[in-house]
Image (tube, rainbow, N blue to C red; front, side, top):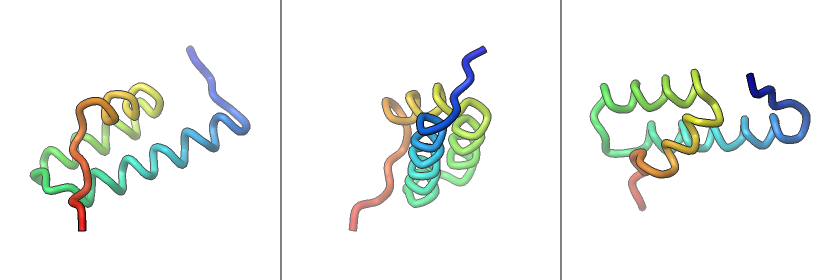
Length: 61
């Protein structure tokens, strides 16, 4: 299993928080938002990469 610690872990945490905030601020349905947040939380690195490629984006001001 891949273990991320130190500076890499901190960077991944910041990126995951950014992804979750972006998902919550997106125009996606509530069910879709919950699913994306769970994917990002349960699979931090893989979830972030998948969200980056295919996830909903926050609405632009």
